[in-house]
Length: 219
Image (cartoon, rainbow, N blue to C red):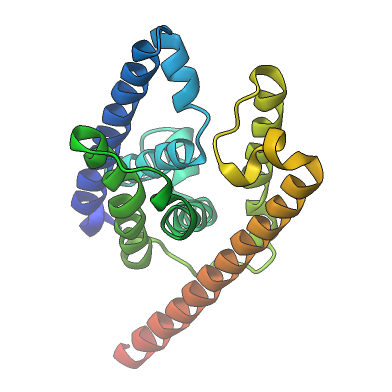
């Protein structure tokens, strides 16, 4: 909706700021270990949090620009795509706050970056999704299609780990847990994705029906 473009623009700028700040610190961390900047970029691109925040920032940028700016913008403006991103960024926040936050204690600018990508962008994007995304076309079957992104990330992590032995999250660490346990962990997380997706579709369809009844009463 055009009236929420300012919210989308501010959210996108904040999201990109957090991502750039996180990238800068990732490079600083690898350089402190005697590795190069490319190692920092490679580390950075291994996290689902980063990849999903990129999608959030792109979706908000598309909303700020409006549909007349090409096929990529129109893709990110699709209600199904925006709801899939809402599902993923919700999982990012839930897993981090329930399972990962206690594992490290960032300070200074790194803490700011951490707060942006894990604590600020998820509710901000969900607010935008609730206020601005049309939801009449949302369907239950779309929830399964949306799992292609987290499933693709899972195989990406396994491939990366097989190449360099590094896994971004403890519950996906094949070296420590083995493939069988990691597969079970992945299935549990996938169930969480599906549950959140179903909740979002239910909320979206309820909101769409409510808005339709309000419109009919006003006519």
